[in-house]
Length: 71
Image (tube, rainbow, N blue to C red; front, side, top):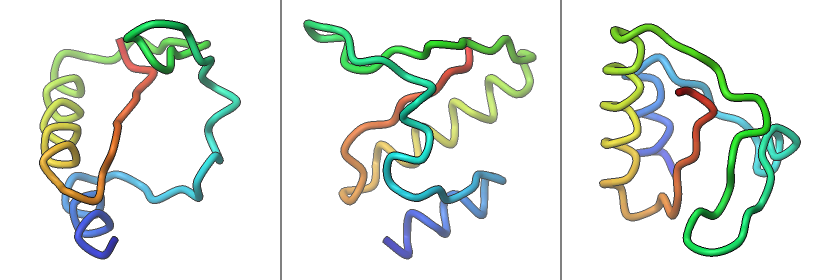
C-alpha cells in the first residue's frame, strides 16, 4: 500500500478511503464495470498526466482496478 501512496504523491494524486467516491459511479453490466455518473471534461495536458498516473497504478500488483470520471 505504501507503493500506491508514493505513486499518488509523485503524480499529485490523493489517497481516499475505500468506497469514499463510490457515490460518483454506477455499476453497469458486462465488461464495463463501473461508469462515472458525472463525467468531467479535462484538458489534453491533464488527460496526459492522468493517463500516466493510471498507467503507473495499473502496473502495481496491489491495484486491482482504476476508474476515473475524466473524459
